[in-house]
Image (cartoon, rainbow, N blue to C red):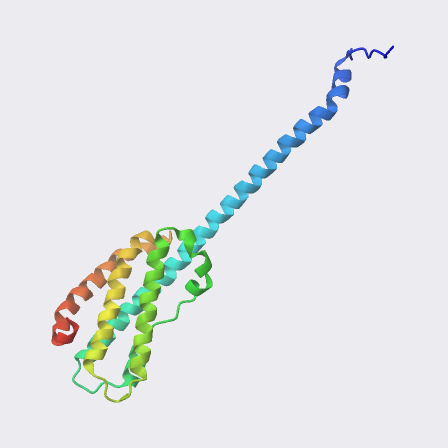
Length: 209
């Protein structure tokens, strides 16, 4: 006859713990694993949030620097186009300083993290590069000592467009640094005033209309 196994009965609390310690260890291990996963995911999320803040701040600082440089270049090109003296490539080279971006090419693979702002930033950097190319062509002009004022005025027009488009992006590209963001209002107003002035000035060149 088969041997009958009698059910286990514990007599003390220690007996119960000894019998079920394997199950308890498994439950505790599973709980610890869940906590570890949650902690890891939370740490990764916090890391991504910090990277996003740093990315937005870096882009915001460089973007504003490029915007100020574009505004200064516009003013220089406008004054040059309105002057009565011959315009030379050397004048343009000395007057226009548009620094090449550093943050943008280094962080291009992460720009998608900025969401809807990414397209605005890509568009603005594209416009800035187009203006740099235009200025480079003027410096390589076939008659470098006699550049037509309308060509300079065309570049001035492109520069102020960069500024007005960029001014619209600023509210969505906060750096969270008060001393930087608080200047945006003054910069936007300066760009607006310059754009209005240019609308009247560019009438000197009907080709630009």
